Length: 370
Image: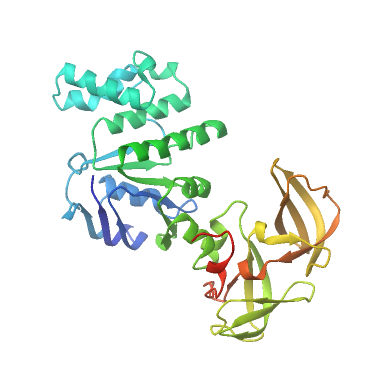
């Protein structure tokens, strides 16, 4: 296996710059996920690593060696595509062993390696079937097996679960996590689904408009987003972002005026903002509590009951809707008038430039491990 380093990497198509100076290190054995909205450059970046797109400028190193000009098949990588890309006329055995056949590996050794990987992925009983005789999840496992059998230094996954239904996505995601644990390999995974990113990654790279917004572990990004974009993107349901006005600010905290006129003191370093400025208060649904004396009031417009928890959508001002997480047995109903209290110590404040103001207490919250 190997580590990978990107140094000021860019990609342009004519005058259009898609990747804008990426600096990143992915360590040996890490499961690194590139996540971001459509068009952020995550798939382009993965294809540059694979050698399927040329690097306009900057350096790509694998195991300390510059590989910008090394052909894709000589980089020691294996890529799993969204579309499976299986040969329809070949059996599972033939699909998985095809790269070995092209490399001149003897049939006995080829079969032995195919069967070993098939056992790992629980595919042995399907070895003589063709792709049309398999489910979507089984096809994806064959595509993964075809990558494993090459014994690459790094695995690359380009939205491999996008073609699966919801149940298969969850099942295959679990299988990928177990596979990473068993192989101890370096994996780079692209997705637009932040739930996949949170559940699979050791390290998440959040991209926007061809730039890295933040790199960190899932919980670092969840509890300490560096800006409004990361705060709103990571988490499901997403973070509530409420426009507020600064009443007062100091290095010891920021007091904001909420919709409806109530004040909330948030323990963040307020030296970067001043009284009268508009800032965004960020509150995750689990930190917005139903409270008869709450500082926010509104009308329930949607109730999502998921069993163990319920998500309540509350309109607290015209066109301003927040989501609160309540107990699954809650009796709240659509059209109810309720009051909500933000947990100040768990709240975020994003300044006029979108950057997060530093928390003074969040790492001390009970039950939160950063």
